Image (tube, rainbow over all chains, first blue to last red; front, top):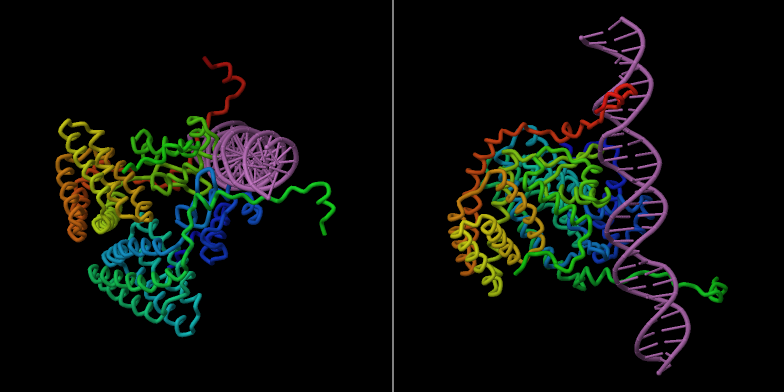
Length: 248
Length: 248
DNA sequence: CCACAGTTAGCGGTATACCGTTATTTGAAT
DNA sequence: ATTCAAATAACGGTATACCGCTAACTGTGG
């Protein structure tokens, strides 16, 4: 039904920093390779370095950030290789999720699933991009929840975030096709047909692979080396007594 | 080739704390459900709470620890459900790793793989338990490295740790069979036969499932609820003036 | 003996401050 | 100018200290 994290949570600063940074990365406000300096970010987000550091670590486990020990952090590179790896793993795990969901489906989850499907459909009709994305994401989230495996859930969550990131990098896919594929998946799950659900889920993921890879090659990423990228330091030139007067 | 983390790393306190705690958990020195109190552990490991907290978070992403926000941390429960979920996911990902390894095999990796296989064989002959475990772990590590997917690697690493944990909980499996299955897997990979490698890897993982589940049911874990488990506090009874005199 | 209200203190969350390493600057010598 | 070394400061790592929430204790009245 929801998928939202407990609304009554007072939200720690770590959490807010984490969410904000994640948002900025997925939004491309922070580009891959961008240096992330603890003090600066802490100041900007109005928190101390402690919760900020923890947020960065969390982002690293999501694969959105790379931390080089004793050096610093950058937004994770996201090139063709990473896209390929992402699809490899998703093809495995989303298939598993669909299969388990089909085996363990129950009515309340099924209706939730159908609700998201219709929501996505109507959003597609209105051409409401954010709503489409939200509904589709929720659709997947319900399937993962249906799988009943917290472990699988914890592994797919970061992948979903990366998919969303990829989506922003590649600018969309056909929402109509998305919906049709989801509908097919829903039918298989509702029928409790694990093999068919697995098959459909596989095709659903795989169908996005080639287009994404093609687009990924266009970015022609400069192939960032994290350890090199964290080598430089920003320094405000120290001013002499004379240069102090030269200022505007 | 190696799998060891860069030897030239000066090792931060966070890292040492992380490794030590992981060791204790996998060793069962810290049992599932055991409460982990930041100050106490920090004092025991001779570090401050900052690196300790970070170590705990890292352990959480490995699935060895559960952190309940604003409450505290416990060693992650590991019951029948978790074992089942672990096998579900491993069946998917180890198959993928084997498949990719077969596709991307190169000579240096293949020899490394064979080396681990023979090492495991000779260790089995000597009945050297730790060496067997090490060689088998290294065997898997090489396969994962061969897959050439840092993402997959990052996802399988925590699972390997959990498998090791499970191993301690269930007290071993037949080393001979392990070796035979590994040999079969090696052949398939060396032949570049991805489908066969995938098939063998699947059976290899799946064969451990039932025995492990059976053993898991024996622990008859009290089914720990993390949020409940972190509710209590240890308090040294405050002493009155009179009771102060009563001490030995 | 039990219930309930007030008090104490366990414990996680966070800010601040210091340390060590190392990239940049600066400036003197060539 | 170019090189090289000493000086400076950027930045990650960590210790310490404080805050707030709430569980555990206390003791008073039933």
